[in-house]
Amino acid sequence: MQGMNALLHPTIALLQSSSLTTVVQQEIERAILVGEYEPGSKLIEATLAMKMGVSRGPVREAFRMLEEAGLVRNEKNRGVFVRDIPIDEAIEIFDLRAAMDELVGRQLAKNITPAQLKEIKGVVSAMEKAVKAEDAYNYHLLNLKFHDRLVEMAGNRKLTAIYRKLIKEISLFRRLNLADGWLMPISAGEHRQIVKAIASG
Image (tube, rainbow, N blue to C red; front, side):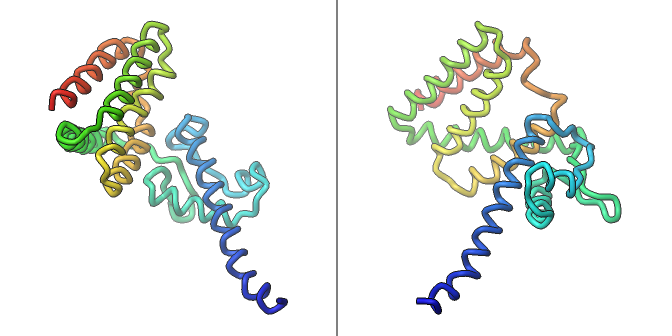
């Protein structure tokens, strides 16, 4: 029995450290995406480790994952910074996202189920309620949910993963934020049209 425990340990240690890194990464990512750390600001390994009550290893590893995800940049001898996305790159991301939305729309027009259609109609209704209540924050979240669910419903896992990466990068580009209230009613109407077009095939 003793021997068996000894065999398990390295794996458990590895699992613990990798799941800890994931938790740390998700927490830093959340803070970046909600704007706790502005684009261009420096992230300090020791400070974050202390704040989260972990050693610096998982934080370092989380930085590496966030760099791959396009949310931070690691500058040699200077440190890790929240990425500031320049306008030309933002335009490329928006173009790519538009192409993906079109592809998803075409696929769903062919094979969306009545239950899926009902679900996205429900999201649009909630968006319209948020417009009436002038609730820009919840409108923004529902808008993200609407597009994310459509992509998910199309059923291409690779596309979904790439799409989510782009959305995170777009949210760093905060200057074009949907939270500008005047965009809400127009945008809500457009979403109703998207659902109509998909429903009619």
